[in-house]
Image (cartoon, rainbow, N blue to C red; front, side):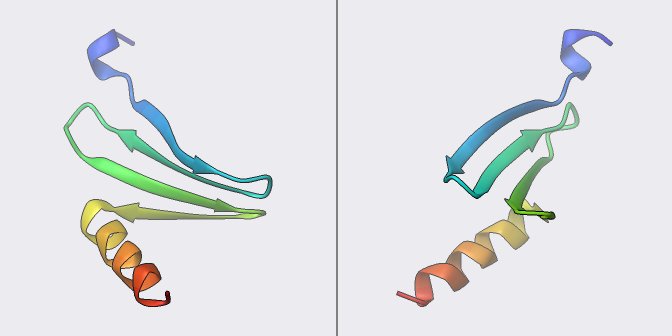
Length: 59
């Protein structure tokens, strides 16, 4: 696989039990991932933004 076809990933935040990370696909789409123990949730950009809005409203 050539470099321009690789999925780039980066960790956004991490605790001892949870990880939030994102991946950038070669087609330009970003996907966000929440690893919560045995469960991993996947979000497209619009869904991720809505989730962050929901979390901020809890404060």
